[in-house]
Image (cartoon, helix red, strand yellow):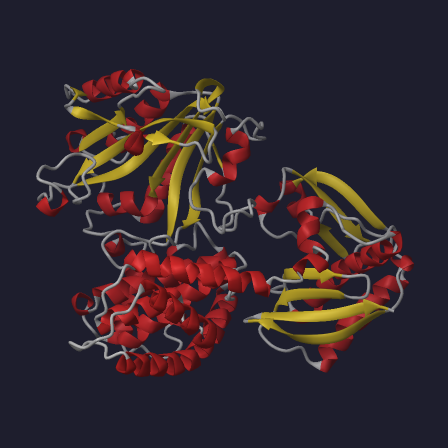
Length: 626
């Protein structure tokens, strides 16, 4: 086994293997999905959903990638030997091209070949397949292919020996919802040769959770369509969707006991140990939480997320504040994350250079959040201490608390002190109370949802702004007169964006926009308040361009060509392959859905009404065309 490979080399070896086998390797999409029904990308196949259900992909039928993913369902488990929030998912896909035989044999070759792959001993591998039920037969095709694969390595395998059948719960994927594409899968397991822990069952088996066997790769075969009436019909286009966690395969190839000791995470932990001085073995849990949460936070901030009390921003706030809490347990100084972020930049400089490019922005956001949390933490811990004393925590006469009371406390700590749910739960558990964590979280979640509904009240009265335009190419207005005013202001946001970049620097990027018939609101990345001189320069620059009477042109072209011409855009995964590029003379060029005025002379004088803070590292301008 190639234990001397770095995480970078393992990722590249995977991608190069499939590239040589006719796959187009595409870059990772943003962590922020185009599908707004979910908060983050949680699997490699998410950006490909439209193509898995029939749309033609512009790069062909064979694809491969390493996709950034974020999952927070198990955030309280991070710190054990395997749970992570941020991770990369290696994957290869066939969109109606090859099927089970090629997928299985390529998987086996890449894992076991000493020349073309990772050189894993095939004797340490076992696989699982779908056992069949009343809706679909046992996957004998996959079984026979696996027999062939093992035979090529001199191993006599069969059902019950290296190949094991499991029900739908273990070896079936989909559909997402009540109907849609679905099918059997086959999973590949590695035998770590650890002792079986009987707490997980009397006998060990391949799918046992004791840790002896580690799942390293999953091949999904989408060959059925579940109809709304519950029937399973063969799909016209059969697809292959595979996934292999990068951190997990790196752990095995580098022969490390957990994912945290690999070169993808240990440099972060090593720097933290250096700053703290406390041995890793004495505070393993805290060291791992800090490494995972800061890595995830850096990637989220680089993808445009900022701390807030709702949706993606709330998750980022949870991650950062949990990391800050554990930093206090390690006696780390303020701004400890600066050197850790540099380590993250170094680890990912080849694959994700945006971390290094946006390092200052990342540190600014972290610093602002640390200051806010320090104040909230002091007040919050003081309140929790008095609450615990009042309820006789840790004594024989401790009050018997219900999950509903715990839920009320969780919400109060969040609303009044900015405490994430996980922090409050940890503090209460440390006081010695026993309760059903899931019930308490569900009760608290209901209160959070009601709170968010209130905070979003009135949103339907606003125009969607630039963010909506990028997705739909539409503006909503009460009448034609309002639409004309909004259109003028929308074109003004393009001029404002470019003027800000020229005056303040190229770090400026749009972070949001809201346009009414009376004014525009434009959010942009910038670490400090603008000076009066800077505001005047921006205002004068916009007005100068308006007075020139420049033509506004629209061209349609491929995304890659658009960016090569210098057109500004947000994230690549937000756009179709064909995009609209709006140019305002030679001054401004952006990807946008429109609409715009035909000439800048159609607008009046541009006036900045107010410049203020929107959130950490984000400024907001309110302006009008008079």
